[in-house]
Amino acid sequence: MKEGKWDRKKYMGMELNGKTLGVLGLGRIGREVATRMQAFGMKTIGYDPIITPETSAAFGVEQLPLEEIWPRCDFITVHTPLLASTMGLLNDSTFAKCRRGVQVVNCARGGIVDEGALLRALRSGQCGGAALDVFTQEPPKDRDLVNHPNVICCPHLGASTQEAQSRCGKEIAMQIVDMATGKGLAGTVNGQALSKAFAPQTKPWIALARALGSVLRTAGKQAQGSVQVCTQGTPLREAGSYLTPAVAAGMLAGGAQKDVTLVNALLLAQEAGLKVTTTHGDVAPEPDGSAGLLQVSLQGSPHRVVGTVQGSTPVLREINGATFKQPAPLTGPVLIYRAKACDPSTLPALTGLLGKVGVQLQSYHSSSTVGGEQWSVVGLSAPLSDLSELKPRVAEVFQLHL
Ligand SMILES: NC(=O)C1=CN([C@@H]2O[C@H](COP(=O)(O)OP(=O)(O)OC[C@H]3O[C@@H](n4cnc5c(N)ncnc54)[C@H](O)[C@@H]3O)[C@@H](O)[C@H]2O)C=CC1
Ligand SMILES: O=C(O)C(=O)COP(=O)(O)O
Image (cartoon, rainbow, N blue to C red; front, side, top):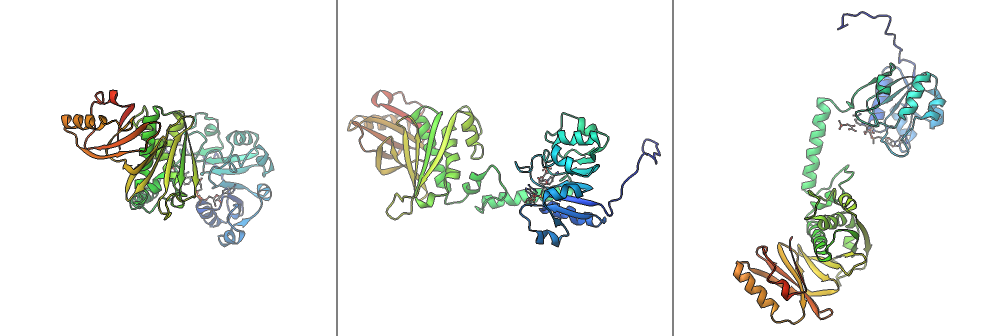
């Protein structure tokens, strides 16, 4: 009419009253759709693998096996997630079982109704019309469905109301508050590590995992290959889910990839050619069974680091088979070197260098002797800008800011 037209004959509708609607997926939205359509006088039947027939009967939906649903429906609407089991729920074979002229609604996820099959059914008249809010590719490049005269569609607007967006905003804000107060996260699909990362008791373990990853990368001089993360002790039984991404983040830190987080670390590690696997052993490493141990090793090399948490401090217990009787804190600027055991000149040379550049030695820990050599971990007040004076005196030296 805005174009000045008055096409009364062109538009002929169909009553919903007395028609049968098949609702596939009877969760939050499916059941709301069913009760609203009952108000138009529709008979509602449906299917959902986890909702009992008694529950769906309470909101007026008779549940039937899919095979019995197809031939009964005038309209079918899908309200499931997109899963392997729902991909192409409506396909060439199921369209063929439907009443001729069946009308289909997909406001859930593109692909639940197979787009190729839908187009074929529309062209043959087996499908009388479709309403689509979602597409396998958004926006869809292939416009055949959008352009079909019996299709009406919207650009994924199902949640586009002021009220829904405001609820989403509030929900997200509440989730951030929950995460920050250590209550865990609901509904995360890729942030398993995050829900634990903010709990006070897990924070030092995550710091340890990152630190061990950094030590291993620097000592092993590579961020590629297979890394084995092993948690030991009952308290760490479920910890692999967040410690493994933290180890990967430590391995990747300082490398080519920017913005490595606990959410994307495993994916970025995979892209960088780093395979990170996790195992767990329940054997408690401490007599009281309270602490756990985290062991990270680079397969096919002698590089292996083992750490734990003392109080709330991540500490190094072992590096490449050399153990620290007094575990070495892995916080702040840390200098790590391997040198001949009992060489009396190394430590004075180091303290002399520190004095010269005005950096304080805050802690010093040395390991057991392996093959005539010892590892030393030195806590510093600030990182050293130049290690060249130390290099001739030691077998290897590196620095980390943890
Ligand atoms: N177009 C849009 O903007 C919007 C789309 N959605 C989508 O709508 C869909 C439904 O959302 P909700 O009702 O909130 O989800 P929900 O999780 O409450 O319900 C989904 C239901 O589908 C059922 N289901 C799973 N596999 C099935 C199968 N093979 N056959 C039949 N039922 C199956 C589940 O048991 C569950 O009861 C989701 O895909 C969601 O992403 C949701 C909001 C807005
Ligand atoms: O909530 C949903 O499942 C939706 O599909 C809404 O999509 P949107 O968050 O508006 O991009």
